[in-house]
Amino acid sequence: MFDKLSEKIATIIVNGIKHIVKDIGNNNVKITRRRVIVNDQVLIDNVLGEELNIKWEGGLVSLSAGGSVECGDVNGDVEAGNGVKCGNVHGSIDAGNGVVCGDVGGSIDAGNSVVCSNIKGDVDAGGGVTIRK
View 1 (cartoon, rainbow, N blue to C red):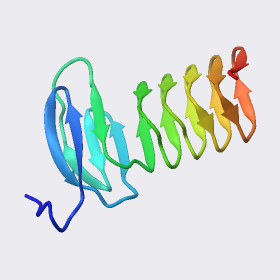
View 2 (cartoon, rainbow, N blue to C red; view 1 turned 90 degrees about the vertical axis):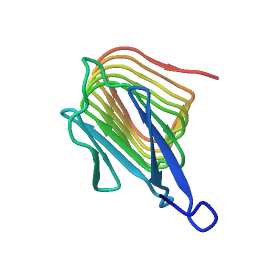
View 3 (cartoon, one colour; view 1 turned 90 degrees about the horizontal axis):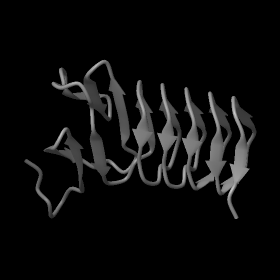
View 4 (cartoon, helix red, strand yellow; view 1 turned 180 degrees about the vertical axis):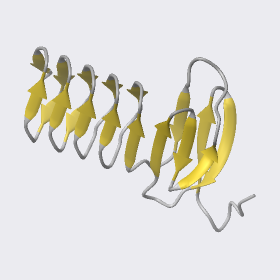
């Protein structure tokens, strides 16, 4: 376990089971083929169940998933094989389906519609684009 006085921790909840991980400040989470990888370390090798529900509590620099992504703010990029619903994303978003988010510091490539507050980069969307004010 971590010494909470000297090290920061983050929490990842996978299908209702809480896991404590070291928060290195620029955390990367990747979800692929029933595997959860945090900061290049395999946290879970074979997630059971039909659906993979993940909640991250802590700083997040990038997020990559084969399916849909729902998250808070991300300091870097978000990549998803399906839809993305996030807070503010300081990097770019690449989604196989629609995107709903706050501000985006980079570009968006979406297979369907895009609804965001502010986008600094380019938008390539397979559907409509809505900028919220």
